[in-house]
Length: 363
Image (tube, rainbow, N blue to C red):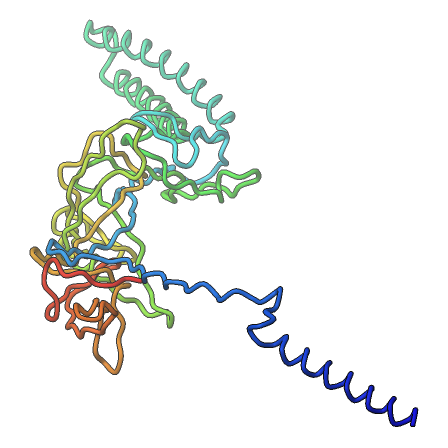
C-alpha cells in the first residue's frame, strides 16, 4: 500500500511542475529580463557632389622652354702655324668685349728677335734719313743713295716680318659676346702645335639678326624625327622669361617658327644647321640675354561660348558618352547620353545632351 501512495505522490508533483513551467511562459508570469523591441532607424539621405554645366572659352595649349642663342659664331684662330699656347684668358660661357685678349702663344724667342729687329730698324731709319739729306745736298751720289735705300728696305722688311710674327702670337676678340667654344686640343697641358686657321676660340655674335630662340628636335620611340604642331613653320608662340626676380612682373613677347631657308635669306649665311627648330623673336625685352631659358606657350585652339564639363565627369559605354544626373521623380541617379567635341587636359566640350545650368553628378 505504501508503494502505491508514493507513486501517486510523485505523479502529482511532476504534474505541478509542468503546470508551473507552462504558466511561466505566458502573460500570467512575465519574464523579468524580456528584451525590448529594436528602435527603428531612418536611413540617411544620399549625398552627392554636383557640377554645374557652364559656357565659356575652351582652350588647349602646349608649353615648353627654349634657349636664346646666336646662329653665327665668330671663330678666332692664329694666322700662322707653329708654337704652343702660353696662356688662355677666357672660359666657356664668359662674356668678352671686342678687343679683349683671348689667348697667346709662347713667344719668348720671337719676342727677342722682334726686339732686336726693332732696334735695327730704328737705327737704319735714322741713318737712311741722314743719307737722304746728304743725297739731296749733293754729298752722296745716286748710286750710293740707291745702295743705302736698298739696305734700309731690307732692314725694314725684316722688322715688319718679325712684327707680324710677334703680333700673330696673340688673339684678340673681334666682336663682343659670349665664349661658346674653346679648342681643348690646343689649350690643355701639352697641347698640340698650332695649325694656321684652326679655330681656338669662338664667340657668339650679338648681332640681333643672328639671334634666335632654339629648341631641340623631337624623335619618336623608333628614333624617327617628327615635328610637333608648335614647331611647324609659321606657328606663333607666346614667350616669357623662365627666371625673373621676385616681384618683377612677367613680360610677354611673341615669336614665330621659321625654316632654315628663311634664316639664310634674312642673314645672308650660306648654311644653317637643321638640327634644331628656330623661333624668330619680336620685341625682345632688354632683360633677355644669350643663353637665357625662355618659356613658350602655343595655343592649339581657343573656342568661345562652349558648354564644358570636367574630363573626369563622364564615362563611356559601347562608344557612347554618359553623365549622371538626378531623376526629378525618384531623386536617384540616372544615365544621360551626351555627345562630346574638343577637349583639353581638364575639360571637354559638350556638343549635345546638356544645357548651361544643368547639374551633373560627380560622385
